[in-house]
Length: 155
Image 1 (cartoon, rainbow, N blue to C red):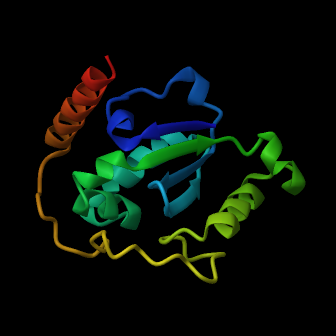
Image 2 (image 1 turned 120 degrees about the horizontal axis):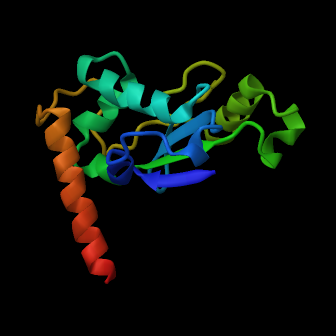
């Protein structure tokens, strides 16, 4: 499993070799899981959501951008359906995804999720108007600045 802040994820253009076998992903903050999904390459699918959010093709992607810059602190988790934790479902991808959805009741998963968690009132809903309509490049620059400032505090 890999956990990475969204602001750091945005700075990675190519999928690291170590992440290539990861086929499940989660968007979350410290207390709420927003979305669980699956893909043969989870890294690329997370990017699909982020890019699709600008055009309204991904509800979780749109949720990220309407809540920017606060959302840059969201966590992206990348997992493998082959991990030991999914042994009870024979490491089958669909079953592993369903297991995570049942475990976390994410806000934006409606399939296989009888009671999705409500979006906390501290966040704008995914259908809110963009407060700042910036290009992806500008948002990445903001993420770079935030990472640099955070890293400088650690030294």
